[in-house]
Length: 139
Image 1 (cartoon, rainbow, N blue to C red):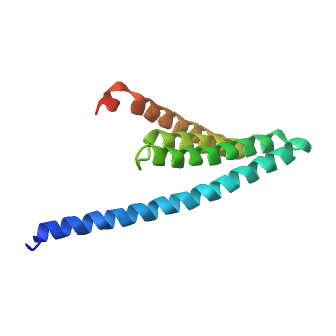
Image 2 (image 1 turned 180 degrees about the vertical axis):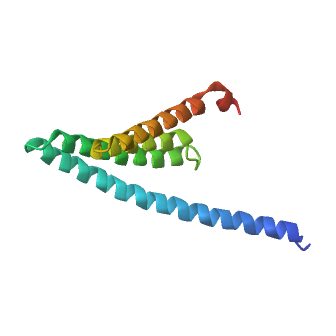
Image 3 (image 1 turned 30 degrees about the horizontal axis):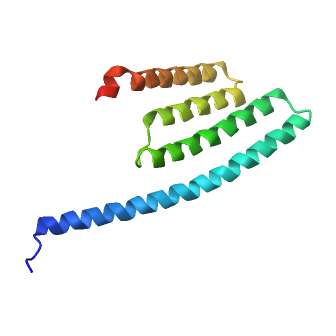
């Protein structure tokens, strides 16, 4: 039986190590998905209670945006498994835009901060446009 060369040995070890880390990553994302699902339903129930009570509009809107953040993170995990273990950049941009909108809703007392948050949303929208552009999709 011929001996494996040093290069073949390293290639086998690298492949085995990457498979182990991929399994750990997948298991971790599965646990995160389960926790996010629980949080999504808990947030939906909390939103239901707010709607029944006489809550301020800002509280209701804040909870709706939080609900969508959980939803987007779950969609990101689903997309990861469906797209052969790849996180699409546009989903991170969607989450970032939603998070900044939530921040504006929650903390709108300082006009300069609100302007900066709005500019960051504009930057993410421009990045989203660039991600969807034909030039970038071809490469």
